[in-house]
Image (cartoon, rainbow, N blue to C red):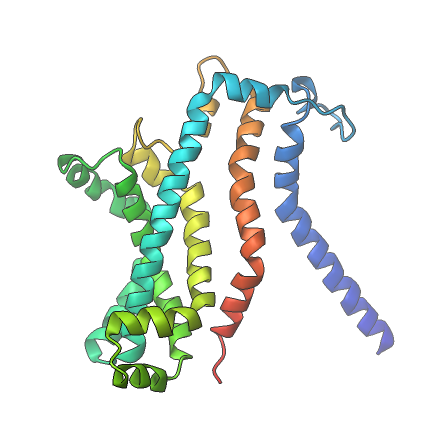
Length: 277
């Protein structure tokens, strides 16, 4: 029994190590390569010890100013998408939690089914409509598209959280004269904060890294950072891998720091919404 227990512990440890290496090595490779001299990035055998250089970041700053404009566009779109998705998901989740009908139950199944549709299927028919409305290449259209893509998942998640909030609190607030918007803002939102944070994290990660919608619906004014990075790969002058890895590092760090900062709230939110009591 003792040997079996030790074998299980060793097996679990090895599994965790393999998963960590699989997940973290690409990030380590990108970040470390951004500080390597150009000739050492793809050296065989790999050079793990090297003298760091900031030349790639200097070149990125001087030659690719459009990349930093793309970062600003990504920030605007991400904040807009997260705000829209959180508000819409909270309101919809409240309706699904507090009301029950055949129509609502059917529509909830539809919301889940929509997430299974490949984004390209929705994107192509939307392009001529958005173009004719004059909304192409704007921050607004990307924010709405990103939010719409995650409202279905956000609604299901928020419904789970709001189900944990006793209906008696709504009734007590209503008897005190609170209107529905006041109940949502003063009663539901504070108690469902972990779920709201979870939805926000999902939307931020998706919107910050999304490429397909940005590629189709933007060209110059609202071009996001992933699009600029793709232009670096397709540059007619050849790929400067050091600058490319530097740009990838700069684009990666904000969302990585955000997820790490929100990690405990995200885990707490997901686990608390998974139980009743």
